[in-house]
Amino acid sequence: MTTTRRDLLSAGLAAAGAAVTANVVHAQDHDHDHDHDHDHQDLPSDPALRVKALESLMVAKGLVDRAALDALIDNYEHKTGPRNGARVVARAWLDAEYKKRLLEDANAAIAELGYGGTNLTVVENTAKIHNLVVCTLCSCYPWAVLGLPPLWYKSAAYRSRSVIDPRGVLREFGLGLADDVEVQVWDSTARLRYLVLPQRPAGTAGMSEAQLAGLVTRDAMVGVAKVLPPQGAHS
Ligand code: FE
Image 1 (tube, rainbow, N blue to C red):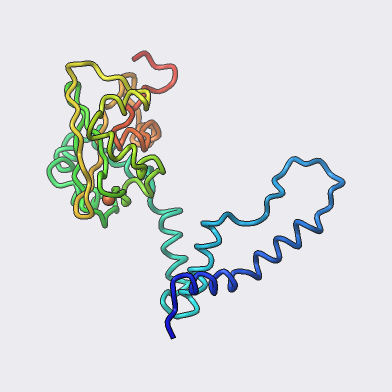
Image 2 (image 1 turned 90 degrees about the vertical axis):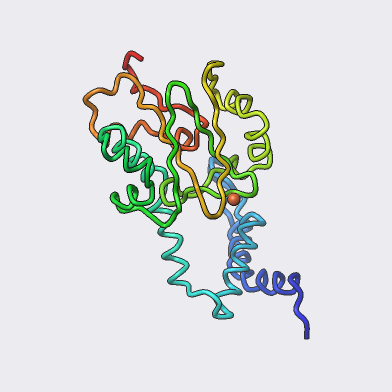
């Protein structure tokens, strides 16, 4: 017997059906005597259904262990994310020796702070050089320090236009660069990912590492934004 992909999906959808049916019943039984300040669309979206179906199938077939899956999801929800990268950037701003190590061997330097698992190169923004990170082929991204990539990073428009017209793309992100600033575009691969070390903004003298890290955004570490001075500071 041959099993097509459609068969697998149908079987998975049937397996996920119990939960869906429960939601439909809930929607039909719903008491409508109250204010409608919530969403009555209780059916999961199509991609969510597909994921549920595939997960059910893979667990049923013994291809994945539910505990391992939970550990993976927990890792991306709670342990990785742009706060890690922000801490790396803040440390580099405060500690010139750390910054030197970071630019020379980013993997060793981020391991000092307990992060790793990504073959990373850090590129530094200066008054004359602005770095922009893209993955033209797909969506390679420095997960260990930035977490999961935003949707726009994976879009065909960003992937193609960042290389053809980086200044135009940056303008659309609200970042206008002076003509004498050189834009360097870094194309990530599965083997090598990039993190931008943004310029430290004015008005941040005397700030702690945690305070500085609080200013650093994901977008600044991809290179589509600058780190802004703290509110109320004179830039
Ligand atoms: Fe990629």
